[in-house]
Image (tube, rainbow, N blue to C red; front, side):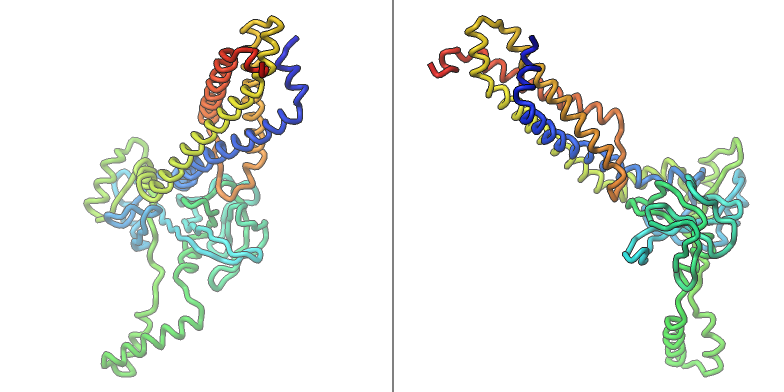
Amino acid sequence: MDLAIKDVRRHLGKFLATIAGVGMLVAIVLIMNGIFQGNIADGIWLIENTRADLWVVERDRGGPFNESSRIPTDSYRSVAATPGVARASPFISYAVQREIGDREQQFTIIGYDVFGGLGEPGRIIAGRPIRRAHYELVADRKLGLALGQTLRLGVHDYTVVGLTRGAVDSGGNPLAYLSLPDAQEVLYQQDNRALEVQRESDRQRLEDAGYSSTEVERLLPLLGGGSATISAVLVALTPGADRDAVARHIERWLYLSAYTTEQERELMLEGKLKRMTAILGVFRTLLLAVAIVIIALLIYVLTMEKVRAIATLKIIGAGDGVIVRLILEQALVLTLGSFAFGWALTTATQDKFPRNLVLLPEETMLTFIIMLVGGVLASLMGIWHALRTPPSLALGG
């Protein structure tokens, strides 16, 4: 007879409720692990999924993601002329907030050279890439847009021709890809009323400066806002080119900063992501510690509740091995059942979270081992107390 199984059947409702409760606690721990790793994965997703050997940005800036960077659009031509460079493509990125589907959503616009340039969207799960110079858009499915649907950006409507999956910026917001001219227009172009206000303001400034009416009319077009800036130049090197030598050449002769993909990743991890990663890491550690304590206390209490039953077993001649097996088996079943419930609950709801959850198998296994060790130690402590308690005292004699 397996006393552990028999005891579980006798108190099946209580045991299942305990597994469910502890399983929810385990799910919270796993979710925090996923949020921690997801924050890092989202932060560097665009860097790792943009196939570039070098990122050329404004001098001494940690851009284009960790810090803003603005350089002239035609800078990519000078970069392309650098020895060792196979391709150089203009690239722009910036965050916007628009009403989509009757609710405000924040997302990041990516502008790139759609005719063979670097920076194109990856993981297109429906539709096609952008093939026209204007008014086409590829969006991540998290935006809630469908193929063929139009989105108003600035003064034009853009048609969704492709959908991606998992394309996010450092904040976990979805990406929307446009051609470079369209992305620049959305960022810089004003509507007609705003242009009129700006024009009148410029006119007044020129008149206050003493210019004649003729001179004002001639100078006004020169004061209009331009769109000739980008965030970075993406570089693909020729086979065998020395990446560091090319970067030094760009920095010396073009007065720009050039970073490798590894350096861009490090800038993000040590910059924008550092504080949030540290905060999530602290919460993850505290939550795991609290979960272990709660599980250990629960197993210990459940063990101590069996003191009378253990005393009865000792009176009828049961050996210590039988008692140890009873408690350890129940502790293992409780821990395994709770972890399985928590893991199933986490994976079933993983896609429902607003942030990406990244569940690393090694982290999940480490969490399981830590909780299992805590549960076993708690049960051993309960066994030690139960075996030291005289049967007469346990039975109230």
